Structure formats: structure tokens, C-alpha cells
Length: 100
Image (cartoon, rainbow, N blue to C red):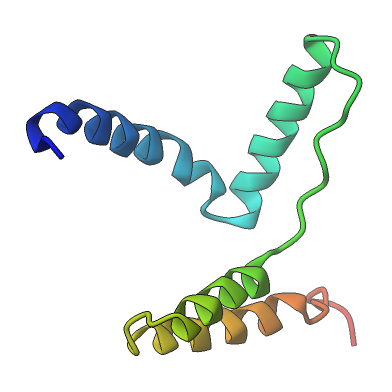
């Protein structure tokens, strides 16, 4: 592997991640991104719709557990715990401030 030859590809990939990842950082920003993608899909005349957003923290935790089963560093457990806890918290119904 020639590190100097691969460097432009790695840089381009990093820039792509930096530009695209913020849109998927929160449920609110991902809803905006998906709405924009759905609008673009309609403008391009594509018949398939962009699927509605659904939280996927538990799916992510599953991949972390898979990684742990295949030798990932034990500190990964800390991430699994937080992903599961936040996944449960996000899945619980939210009451409006005036509701009893």
C-alpha cells in the first residue's frame, strides 16, 4: 500500500463525511435531509419515495455488539450501554408539557 498515493482518496472521503454527516446528527436534521431528498426525488420524476425517518439507535447497538463478538476493544461496551439507554429513552412516548 502506497500511503502517498492513497492520501487524496482518504482526504476526499473525510471531506465527504464532514459535509454529509451533520445532516444525520439529530432526528430534526435528518427529517430535513430526508424531506429534501424526497423533494429532489419528485423533481427528478422518480416514482419511489424516500422512506420516513425511524430511529435506528438499537440497530447501531446491534452492530456494536457484533463487533464486540468479533474482537472489538472492550471499551466499546460503554458505547453500547449509551446507545441502548438513549434508544429506550427515544422510543418512550413523549408527553406534551400541558398533558397529565
